[in-house]
Amino acid sequence: MRLYESSVSGNCYKVRLLAAQLGLELERVELSVIDRSDREAVLGGKNPGLRVPTLELDDGRTLGESDAILWFLADGTPLVPDEPFERAQVLQWCFFEQYSHEPFVAVARFWVAILGRYDEDALAERQQGAHTALRAMERHLADRSYLVGERYSIADIALYAYTHVAPEGGIDLDAYPAVRRWLARVAAQPGHVAITA
Amino acid sequence: MRLYESSVSGNCYKVRLLAAQLGLELERVELSVIDRSDREAVLGGKNPGLRVPTLELDDGRTLGESDAILWFLADGTPLVPDEPFERAQVLQWCFFEQYSHEPFVAVARFWVAILGRYDEDALAERQQGAHTALRAMERHLADRSYLVGERYSIADIALYAYTHVAPEGGIDLDAYPAVRRWLARVAAQPGHVAITA
Image (cartoon, rainbow over all chains, first blue to last red; front, top):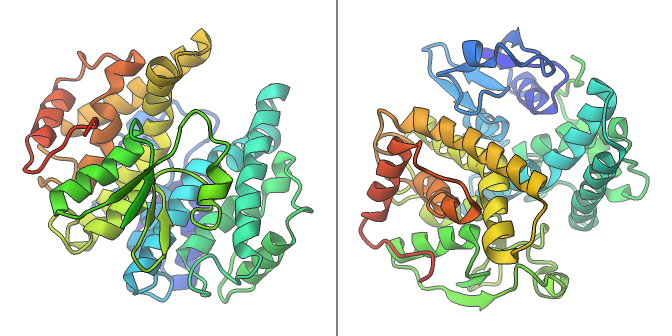
């Protein structure tokens, strides 16, 4: 399988982390997250959003959207539950991640740590949204070990990816002890790899 | 089942439309999309995002995120495919909807048609994002009847919900003939109900 990706992207890291834990080999094709002028040429016809990650199977079929890729690769393994309601809860957290978490946590990190250029007010707004998402996670994780069913799943991978690097976007995790314990629990899973791997 | 919802919300409409087509009865509990001060009191402990729609099952379990609710209610019916790659493609379009479509199409409509108050530059930016999403849909639908597998699925419901009311946000659909043909195809499905139903 081939993964069109950017090595600094948390969305792409999700797929690399899952692949490492499932023992899947990926051929990595690096795209820039700054100069996106080649996106149409490389990803046109492969991913309607022209975004990374895009997964290309050996038979040429392609799939976009990080959390859809996680589901595709992990369904049938212990990383996606069997029980219908728990499966829906995994998806609930994945959609929460893409709608209420990533646009704040990931964008703040991108501006501060990768692009190195931002509007102060816009950054403050993204950081505020990030703290709203982190408070929701903190409440949920206060009496839980993992996001769904007390077992490590792709929901944890989806939310770990950007949460653990939130401080790079000026988002302090000190006020979220349950989130920090959960981050350590996820990082201790067998086969874990770092975002820099 | 009980649906915490706002009748004007396209995200909530998705669930009502699916329920009508599957013959499921929903008890509807209306929440305001303008005054959100009761969200914590009503949805705290039910939905980490404190958002509508939130589905409450008869046994008290609750689920948030519109597209996760669609998956939960429709999996096992003809509205979610059986084949693993097609299932992932349905999720790809649902994530595309929540990340690349809803924040633009739905927010422009909310500002113009519901709130009646907006910053001109901010609106123009949202409308521009909406057209990017619509161009991606137009390319995909140019030679297809439905988003996935040439069959009506929850991916079509997810993207129909806000696309068909995009003009309410000042987003003209004239340039997207394939999208308009697809909208008509979705609206002609048995059991279809309007967003005002």
